[in-house]
Image (cartoon, rainbow, N blue to C red; front, side, top):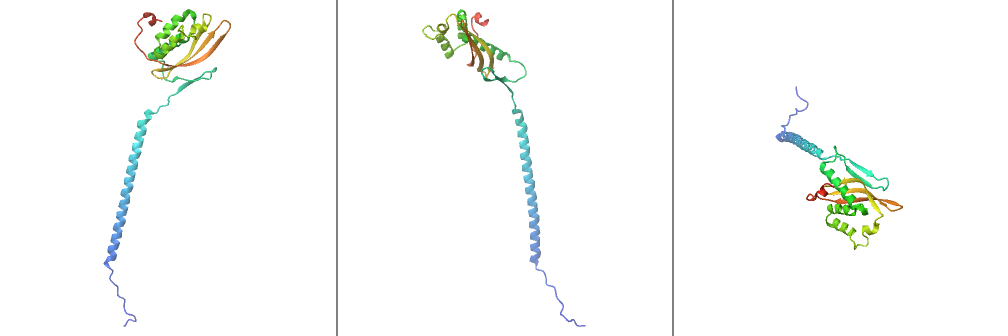
Length: 212
């Protein structure tokens, strides 16, 4: 039997085709491995950063505190004052002694009574130094035309009522007080705030000052 058309013969495949396929497959696997490695690296870095952030937060939490304060408003003057931080317990021994000394100083310094001038003056001078001492001396100097004994004489008194003492820091205090000036037929009340700088020195030598 004779064939009507000649038989087709297959051509050999170029070896470069297989080589190109193998190269493409290697490149694909290499790219996948690189992507997977990069993903793990990014994930690891993110985990480390998150861990460090959490550690930092834990370390700084004890440093963050909310400290409440009491604000006093004087109904008469409208004066605002931060009384002191709210802490458990009462005043410490040192704070109580300091507050008492400040009250004694303000009373002695601002009180005027002709019968007690020397006593108040001496006590106020005991608590004074520097400019405060010089100002007090000038307030009672005979050559001062506006000395307190000339202004008030013997018939006027000035009494002091200390409202509060706030220790601002270890060397400064705010003292809120009022003075009432009484004359023969009238009286006047004024409100004051004194900011007092203080420090402790040696104990007074005289027992009369220790027991005052």
